[in-house]
Length: 104
Image (cartoon, rainbow, N blue to C red; front, top):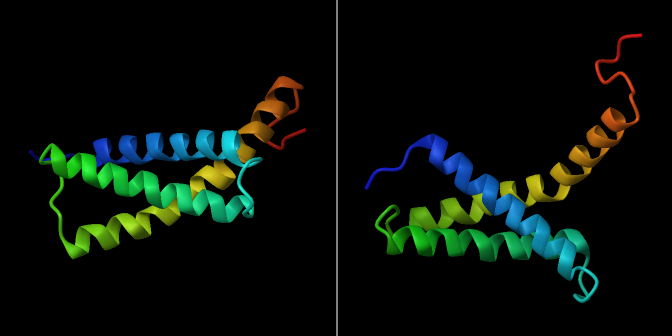
């Protein structure tokens, strides 16, 4: 089974969302810095994506796929860490009626 780039983007977007929700719900119970916890959760989630994809025949187990998913987990962690704050700031600006284009 071949997977498209669009599907990969959707998978990793959902992974970033899952990482963000998991970290937000558990950060008060874990005695680690939040960003480190986010990276750990991201590695676990992305390795789970690789495992599930390999189980369905979408991905193949190899050293290169494990390394690729490991490095992709840092991108997912970055999106999970900073994407929520950016979205929250944009939502607040939009809700308050601020001109988001920067024009006066």
